Length: 100
Length: 490
Image (cartoon, rainbow over all chains, first blue to last red; front, side):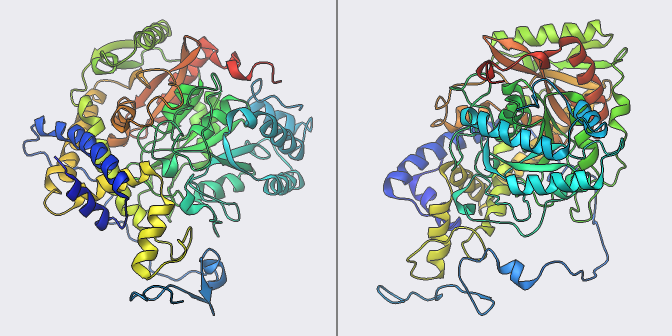
């Protein structure tokens, strides 16, 4: 079972925030989904190994050589805020209210 | 408009292009006109790209279209989670509302190299998470057979666009049934190839061990023509398979005498609507009449496929979607206080509810204390599900059954009930978990709504699927039917 506090904790890990109302709705839905997931408890997996990927490929190597691909300008085209060819982000520390 | 995609196919269009009865420019213009008129009903497209279409068509005409250039000048739509250089790509999310990629997905490059013409980007559930295309930031897409019903999902836009005759072919992606289920709901053919058969480079990642790009068309042969072009190893995708691509068209000889077909008893269980069962039983009779042998088999872990899938796919998604942080591209929240605030607010304002649910489920099942009980347990059950298939394919060439438990449901009917919505995918999810190729071919109608016959083959058995679906299509001629909601449009 998953409770409201756990849902709030997971939201923090996932860098999401919810209003109280959303948290209530999500908790209910997460409970239903986890109840469905708990059906797997009835499966006896014995010594079955986990299957993480279905190709039989292993350690695919390639030569590590640089290729000319995209320009700095192209790579910066979708950046929301930039300055002098660099990505601009807000201060890492809290600026408090009302500061630019 | 002079080209009616409900009455033609790629081969006929190609012949007309080679014989100069039409031009790529004319086809592009006809397609844009068809989208302009029909998309008012279906809302299948997020972005239509007339300038790109006209430019690529002119280039195809300029170069000249020879008999070997099977896709040259043919207009094609791409699902909007496949990135296209210079053409907005949103994955149906607000968080990518302003995203214009600066390079092409491998499939887009390969289609361009073949001379195909990109006409636009189709609607989907946000980040391909959903089964109804209701989780799109850009509005619902409508089923071409009944406008008040969902087109399925997540490739609902691609399926509706093809079924309505807006385009002759579209690409989709399939993580848990996202090509096959909408193909079934819209009465068209859709194939999810073997995991790794088509490069995922440039496909916006959802569940990386499950995602696979495939094709939606009205005709089986058209699908084979398009897959031939996009399949094969790609240095940019280390999970793409090195195996050579066989000649799929060579398999379309209409002869399935002696084909060993299995039908799993779990696929005709009580959760499957009676009307669907009736259509599938009739389809199986058709396969028998064509010379196939059909036996009932068991895939005993089928009922665990849905929880297994949602744990694995959501875990992979929660990891993949960490990249959306408002820094380098996409939506960035305004009036933020600090960097942490950029991450949290951009994500919370940019993602829709279903995407948030999956990120939460995935984050939870990967978190300390729960990893073994959920993610790892699901990975073990996944192995059992794959073993089920391996056992059956030791004796059979093909597994068939319904693609979906019911025909298309009404818009709004399941959207607030995630678990009911998830159960809708029970018959398509197993193929993704096992990595095997699977397709849906139209089998008939129930109460005026299409029902799909699902065909699953062993890894790299796409030719077996095409061969059987083509023989079946020759008998049923389902493609001759015009979708109900599109009648009187042409």
